[in-house]
Image (cartoon, rainbow, N blue to C red):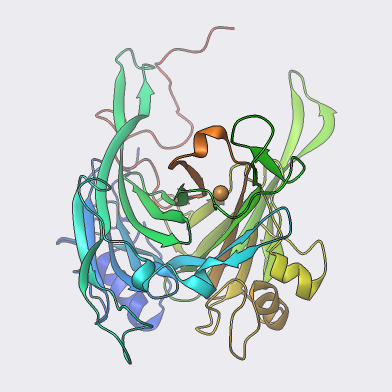
Length: 447
Ligand SMILES: [Cu+2]
């Protein structure tokens, strides 16, 4: 008998038990969705609740706040595929560093730790930047606001629904079903020097999370070099605006299945060199990353954070996939200076530690940055998983960058993998699709 995809992955009751005692949820064992809405989001004093129900009927809820250094911080992120269930996904996420080294060797900035994305650098927004809902927060003028200066309340967070792409289309059953994709974007703008950064997280109606950083503003007026290190942006072969990198790391403290008990796996699909009847044979495999480690992206490689004790209705552990896409990898200059060359990473996994604030130039007992966190914690099995995702953008200026500069984006995607047993918003007649069809009355592709 076909299963309904709307059966619960985690009942509300077990979710409560999970939060209280870390119980192992054996969800999907035939349970019906429990009645009632998802629990109301509770936030700490400095945070504000925010939530949105999207076109799939799914709901995102979380708390938001502005840290003087980190800028926008999102906490207690829950996803509710149906109103009856609320699945904890991430306990806290934010940027953890943005390093900008210039290729001429004449300048480097670490914008999160030296300037900060919050405080006076966080810009007030208007209808021009955000023709949608604008939310206010108390933003101190000096430090964290506890000692000096005033803390005015300013509109800084843009909350915007977007509908731009095709979510799905299928004509296999003779009748075309199609739907536009809906996203919910939360963003703030921070001005550091001449650059203005849009710190944005996009929550998809289908459960994806896409952290991105957009850069606009103006090219640095004092960083001009030569043809080997820059690009001529004025008349003739003069005025070479210096090339530079935007090295960003995001920190994501996971809460899948509860505060602890998470695991990490790396997927690889390796070409065997053997030829099958029609196509080359490629072997897929999962490798456990059991202890804190760094990892680098390769073709057909991705990672996932999973909750082995929390199963969807198909008895698959719920997980999120870290999907880098193709991007410019980098090694933090600060890391290379302290750990030698070839220490770059695309993603690193550590156990949660409140002392691990920044990806580099961290202060305190626990190390200078991610490489120290990994080294110092490498003997303790991963349990309360934090992922550090590094995405670089090498910026070669263009004539068109002046002025202002067209926004350039960098980021990655966090994609639900087996969070639910089928797609959330299956069209009519499709909810029964789950697994290899016993009888297929659609069309086979042409030979
Ligand atoms: Cu740039």
